[in-house]
Length: 585
Image 1 (cartoon, rainbow, N blue to C red):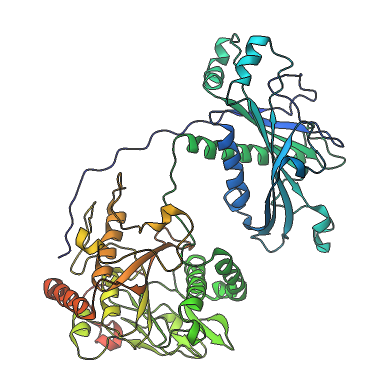
Image 2: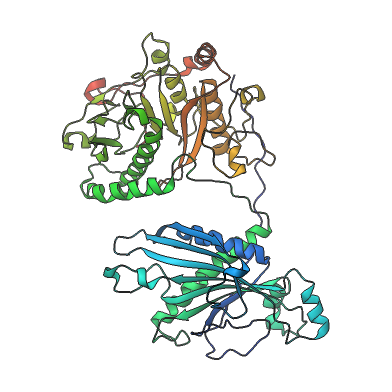
């Protein structure tokens, strides 16, 4: 019923285009150059810092700058995100102060930068997008005519200006650490002049790069008062390094657009990023002390904060899923996973928190994430953990094994009715989660796969195809789809040039099982400290399958693969010291 096949390995990627920067602050008075004009402001002077040849157009430059403006966290690990305050398109009659001579401002974006570190502070910043026609005064008539007919005869600039007046009092009008210590910063796009020049042998490499480029990208700054970026000191060196990093990112994004780069992984499709991040920061700050009292041998920094992140994401998702029951699954939740996670949620007076709780798992890696104060539940594991005796109040933890085929063929529901199942790296139990949910009335689930297992063994295929009749069962986008048309297509839908590999094939295999069990698989790339961070949410039913058809599908899976399951004996006293293997933590 569920089949797979193997194909050849994909070809290696092509090498990336190399950034060749030129430092401009080594010269206090750069020679005038009509092809690389200096910015001119009414009140302050601009200093060029670093430049590089670029092989992309002005429109690519503007889009790359907008991407950097929207996602500053890609530029620095010390930035959490940027919240948009407003984004205004300007016409010719709406120009204000003409800050840059000869330039016209087309767009004004005001954003609030949020820090990731506690000792930094928020900062409001204006981002303005400018263009101006290329100056033709210093070139001959033939070249001037060429530039007038060229698509690259416009110069572009994107100016970033911190709002010093809005800085908090604690900052004492100082810029936060994550922002370059400058009054203004300009990303510039300067079209190249097609003039042939002689090059020495030692300049051939740079010349080859320049000759194939369509423009120069450059970063200029207005320094803080009483600072000189042309002088060699710690402050100017930091400004240079920051600008070099920004230029490199701009070059990478712009070059990727030329090559037709298509984003492969999308985040925040099922839960709003801002809501999850704000809740995660709250929970992380409240419970980071637990890393100092870790009782297991596993890495507390990884497991603690991974579980906090998953809890924050779930709480945000549940607010919409279970709005009629105060944001809580009516039947509580049951977590099936592995490791030393702490997804133990304590909700009191509708305020979500996290309590100290071990990751409990039966073979293979069966984790029941317990509930407290509004989330009834219990946990199972093959052996008692060192942490169990140290939790207060004591949760309901049981040393017990599990036999999925027996659970699924029993008359009773495997888990509480209307419960929410969580499987965080549940190993061999991962493919069984949709089956459990299908036999539990009203159940929904989150499945985060790790190791590749089928219902009866290892998953080894490098390619997997879901049969077309299964895809035709009514698997449209969610009820609140994203605005990007590319995201309207489910991740499991057939596509040309689809990436191959065992990880992707395994995701398609899980999606196939999920559909057969009556759920529409929705995939989310979770923001957790793990390379295995894709989560599959099963919250919507397949429109084209009746309950009887789902039961028939599950019965067929059990008949074909159920005999391959062997339940392990609990470890320690609960299993009289016997076990048929282990499970990784």
